[in-house]
Image (cartoon, rainbow, N blue to C red; front, side, top):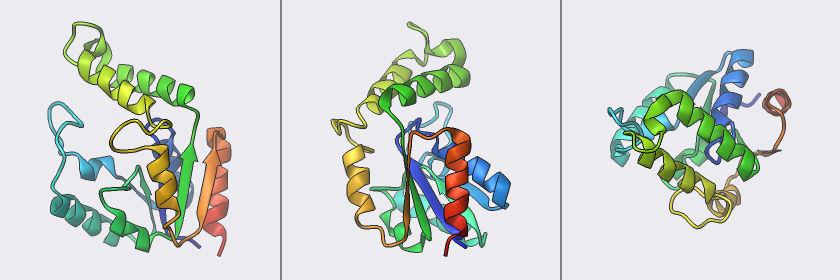
Amino acid sequence: MKKHIHIFGASGSGTTTIAEKVCEHTGYSHFDSDSYFWLPTQAPFTVTRRHEDYAALMDRDLNSSPHWVLSGSVTGWYDELASIFDLVVFVHVPADIRIERLKRREAERYGDAILPGNSRHQASAEFIEWASSYDSGSRSGRSLAKHEAWLKTVTCPVLRIENLELDRSVESVLQAIKCN
């Protein structure tokens, strides 16, 4: 059985949700890359940790559990982890679906603060714009081209999930975990 799984994709592709559901079924520990990369600040997702700090935190947590799922992308900021993955799951969802999910998530997280003229409006709009350019690769950070290039370097099995419903995505990952 696969015991160290990395599920990643664009923002809004469902990696965290899939990881949580897989962990509910398997009893694996779930870790999310955002909680390591970003410092917990009053305005979330604005200040990054230093490499040695997030690496130490991730290494501590990943080494504390024999079976885990890591959701979110580490591509470009902690590529060294690739050597310990037993399975990589790449989730790709069309941009229109991802952006709609992200807009809903922003509204759930921040409420009226994202409305025009309010405190989080500009940050939320910039985030949606950033996330919208994933497929075209016209932004820094995560992009489809960078993820595809990284996948070519991975030595463990790769499962691609293309726009499947949540239950089918979870079932696909559970089946891949059981394969030797």
